[in-house]
Length: 140
Image (cartoon, rainbow, N blue to C red; front, side):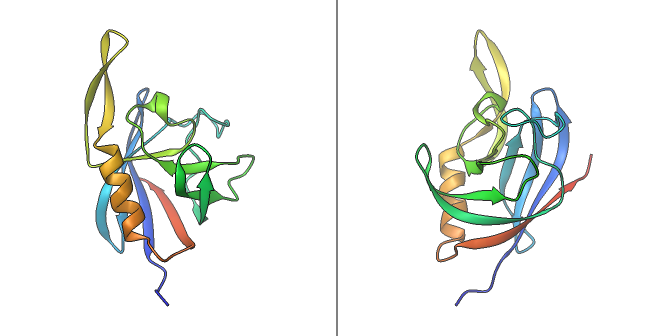
């Protein structure tokens, strides 16, 4: 049986383009993150409050095998998944290998890049686990 990893999301910057951070597993940075900015925990458009959560493996109809952040006050279906810009978050946590920008709607938007590769790295690192604790810190 595997020991439960220490998983931490550390938010480093909040801007209109989103909340940018890093995800650490056992004190090592695994990838970068993008969430919506803080909009008072509104469903689908806000980051979730910074605190400790339990995450559980789920089979999402849209994203397949992933983890859901459970017991978020007033929220459901907060998932880890791939995507690039804040528009892709739907109130969830996007993973990427680096920060960058992508062209979107005739302008450039800040983004996380190589999201599918980062998501695979995340899922591979948590293989064999059905639950883990996530602690979210704000450092901005």
